[in-house]
Length: 185
Image 1: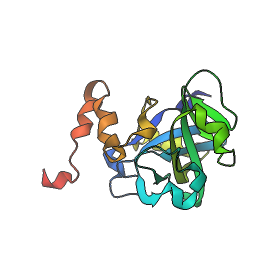
Image 2: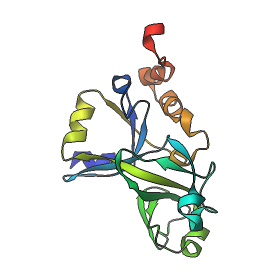
Image 3: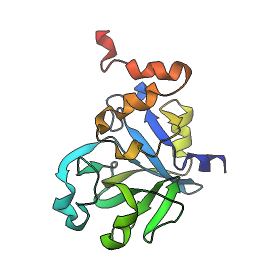
Image 4: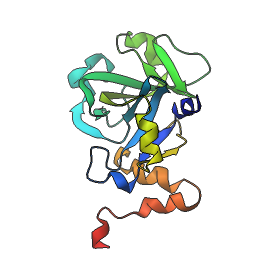
């Protein structure tokens, strides 16, 4: 399926999604197949420290060491992303692409910790039914761009929307300077 190429890539909200849940969202796609799509917003830190909800993972979590809002679906659940080095897939980790994988948060940290070079914990996720995401892409709601291994683990997560757009080729890079309120322009 051509859509499978979305796994491991970023969805970047277009200005069309202003004033919505996904306003300036950057979503790392964790899966995309005939059954639907799933990803997490990687640029929405909360003020809740990882240690408040998952104390055994707090020493592994990347700065700023807080829970991130993964999306509007199942916000009472936690999902962990890790950045691993080397070709081996550590126990408890399912690679998404390159160095980035999803970690089973029930895996003991002493098993996963030595292989991890970065970690984020997300409350909830962003999900789409079969065909729904492709329809949204076709109608111009999302830019689909390549992810860098460091994107989900950046300290300056709030600035990720502009950073990702700025590094794109051609006219897409100009979208990084899109004003927060175009009516004031």
